[in-house]
Figure 1 (cartoon, rainbow, N blue to C red):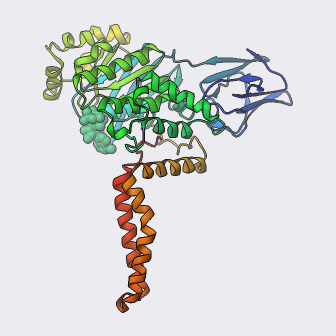
Figure 2 (cartoon, rainbow, N blue to C red):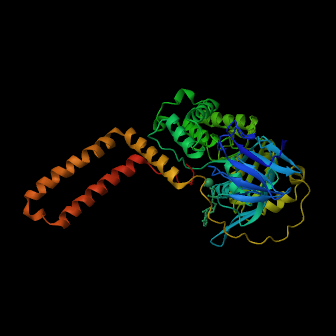
Figure 3 (cartoon, rainbow, N blue to C red):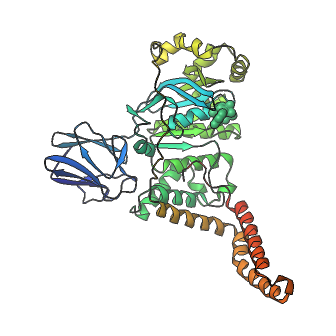
Length: 455
Ligand SMILES: Nc1ncnc2c1ncn2[C@@H]1O[C@H](COP(=O)(O)OP(=O)(O)OP(=O)(O)O)[C@@H](O)[C@H]1O
Ligand SMILES: [Mg+2]
């Protein structure tokens, strides 16, 4: 508890009245001021924002019912006390009646579950059943049209601005720059995600911690392009862990891996959950499901066909193995798997008594354009440096770029000598051609930029 003086500063710097040692918090992050008997919260130009009831603010009046979110910490005013509690991962996660419709087609149909703390949930189902769609809805990146996602008792969609900092998402396709070494990729990600006033040694310490946590210290100086599939996936997870998310979502992290790597990645996820995170993993591989606490089986059309312990799933479907279960779900599309599950004792055991049909929920408005976590100029500067590092890592391309002005000069000289090439148009054509040539090689060399909106 922090007794509230007339003004208190909150931040990472030791001189603040409330010191938060959190990589998401700026040195001088926010200030609580007493103005005419009322409390006013002012953001001091922080990097990752000050939030009140989940919304980012610059200045806001605070009452006893308001929840202040700064980094991983939450505060409430209680009389003349500022009561603080930190979200250290011990949180509940729940979804209810999630429905997603796109182009008139229902992709997710009434999915709901509650997840015990520090647990791993596996989402399985035939291809096209809606697993990635579900992850989009659970992370808030592509919110469901109706239904709710609750995180530590708070509505994720309502408080997305604040809560998204605690969510890590490893998408189905890797978004790594293969030319960089593992350590360099992590350093750039840390620069992009941590406040600008974070000392380099703090960023470095966090990078080393994450490398060690994922067993990547021995590969830190290795280029990502030379890593094995499992090591590459662990690097993707490491990027997400930098900001210490409490919830980690992974879309098929083990696809294409051999059984040993599959097991190694799943064991890593188990360890992450045991260390204080909640993990949701989409997988096609049934071999390691026993490492998970719960499994959610989706039938085609995004219908929940089972939710419970992995060990009881096969008995529930009356199948000998998971391959047969997938076939059964795919081939019996006329069966109402969701209704069957709702009426089963398994549902009652793991999701409580069958709830009465939910009242229709108003369709959610498309989300407002989300605010960038950091100023555009800083992101641009770090991205430029990262692209330069990517180019420098490809020696052939770097030499090509360095030699380009000399080539152009030579070609200009030879052109002046040719009467046919004297015209301006011809020169412009040549410049355009060399730029396209440069860009083609660049596209090959730089690889695809991040597509998920994360860095
Ligand atoms: N924007 C969209 N408009 C229409 N249909 C879509 C859209 N996005 C996805 N779909 C369809 O929704 C269904 C579910 O897609 P989703 O990517 O969630 O499946 P999945 O279970 O993750 O499949 P996989 O295991 O192959 O990755 C698919 O049939 C897909 O074609
Ligand atoms: Mg998918």
